Length: 377
Ligand SMILES: Cc1cc2nc3c(=O)[nH]c(=O)nc-3n(C[C@H](O)[C@H](O)[C@H](O)COP(=O)(O)OP(=O)(O)OC[C@H]3O[C@@H](n4cnc5c(N)ncnc54)[C@H](O)[C@@H]3O)c2cc1C
Image (cartoon, rainbow, N blue to C red; front, side, top):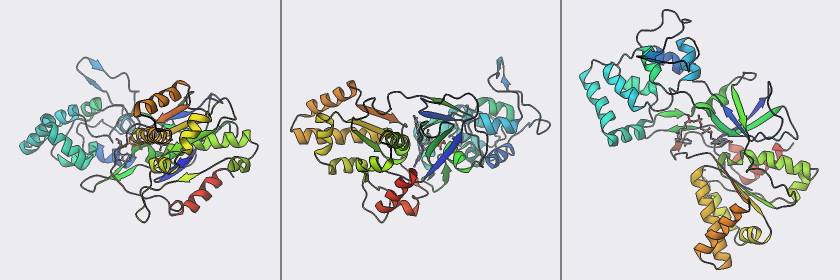
């Protein structure tokens, strides 16, 4: 197993209601916006409802907004509307009309019409709705109109790290808390991961589940597996290891059959090691395992790293068997056809300065091994 962590928390969800007991591989979490952020946004809006509890009427022209439940402005902005992503062009266009300041109008028009300028703005500030409102302080958007232009908060998926074989009424998630610095040193916080990191114990959490049948341990329990988990790509492998421990009747027996390789790529005081480096360092053992022992390869995490892993595996096969790139590529395709190359991908994460480094105890290989063992106690 290859691992790579940043700042990660373990979350346990207790299932309430009629959720299936098995075949749950991903949980879709519907986060809420931070209330302080919403309060600050509301303070910048015009034509607020008559009272805090009054339901907002969202409609522009003929279009009615039946997709939102009838609720107060606060609830709408807390639970349904995405205010943490950078504002869309439509919102920026609306801000042009809601400011009387000519200089602000000019700057907003530039963002709307000049893609390069807009790109630089995004790169420098990764602006939330509040950032934009603060940068154009004379804009006074109408509350209902602005809300009608905002997108819905999207649910975020998390791989389930537990197995129903041990705790059938609970789901464990392994969540990397996304906090990063923008180019101009502004702090930004990923919506859902920070929401999960901060919700008080016992909070009712809107979520749904889905299965990922192609990312399960092989039916043949004796088949060897290689698990590559950069960052929170480790998430589903915790459940895999639990399952293997049950199959083999104890984690000690898993440990006897288990080789753990750990790499750190973000620690200042350590050599940067990526999972691709670990694959390279393994030399011929990975090509032999895949080509000659029917091993299954599992890769979970960021799309870019997954591509790097594929390249590293292909290079190892090419080198060890002295074959051409085309042949190595063909072999990987066969591996996929035989359902032995499994991927569970998280999408693309941009590389920016990460605010928090990993927990001090996890900075050494020994500390990391202790942490892994503690997962099984
Ligand atoms: C199938 C699937 C399974 C997943 N499983 C897991 C899992 O088990 N554990 C887990 O932690 N995540 C998992 N993810 C990712 C997860 O769904 C979220 O995308 C992640 O938690 C960020 O969401 P957020 O709301 O906190 O951040 P958002 O509010 O969505 O903001 C993150 C934004 O910041 C950008 N960004 C800039 N710099 C960085 C940086 N340094 N790091 C990250 N983002 C940066 C991102 O590109 C993104 O646009 C999974 C995704 C998928 C699709």
